[in-house]
Length: 440
Image (cartoon, rainbow, N blue to C red; front, side):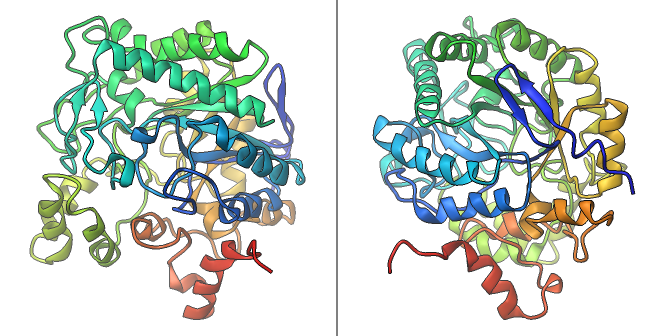
């Protein structure tokens, strides 16, 4: 099996080169403190993947403001007080010749579970319409709140640079705040931030300009974008941005100073095409109750998950967008189209795991690298198998999505018991990130 292309260096920007073409995509659990300060558990989590040999890590969702969290117990970068933690994390990852990018984020209306700081706060968005899948309530941001948020993204980038990290990624995909401005299926504003594609892109372009003003041109900045929104998961919703819309946005981003693009799909998270794969009804039934009070449609969803007679309704709604599409490389065609339209590196995410398939795409120049989350949760040393000549690991990821469906209530990890010798072996692997502890 040829994997030469996978193991070639990649120059992501003038000041950032990674040792191979594999990045750990943004995924993490609730490892941190309620106030947004980080813990040794998160450092253990990130170094687990760095030890496995990947070229770079894109952090999980890192809020630039406390009111922009999706979940409590996620480390934030909203204050200078947390720079020492991010520096410590970066140093730990760098010991394995692995680069670390902070994914600067804001939830907007997609806020799964409130924490103490936003328990009674109305969350902000581009719109005052509730999120369509869970019914999360929100309020359209004022111009003053938009400006404040733009500056918060710039301050987050400055803190990442001061922490000695290798760059930042703007989370402009999968339904979070930047998507809520970009998407024609979500943004219903009547001011200069809504309406035309140029207006809808104004928010993210202002963020890019503010970051460049704050950190200069020599600090790596990339953007994660949903190439196609597929916003009509709920059938009566508008479909949202098309591929041609996103290609134009990517051209504007490149001109504004973005160094690389990270291509995904979907205008919400989770989405039928992100992550692609299965849907374990028993797993979501056991865990979705943690979100019941968060939205007005959550009880409806819970009944659809729990009762077998109702599951076919959800199955049709959810899986109709998956029909005819692969799990591995679900976004490859979109990433290829974007790559052909820009002059900066393009990273593609979406169910990657097979060495020869990834190698072929990179060899052909369809895109420059791939990002992987679930397959690395299942096998953090995935690259070792490819180096040893295997196309897949001995126990590959099944893409059952039990890892993500369990995350609201449990530590993030692989919950597919068939991949382990015993139930206890599964538990031990999930809990391995808690060792070593900071206590003697």
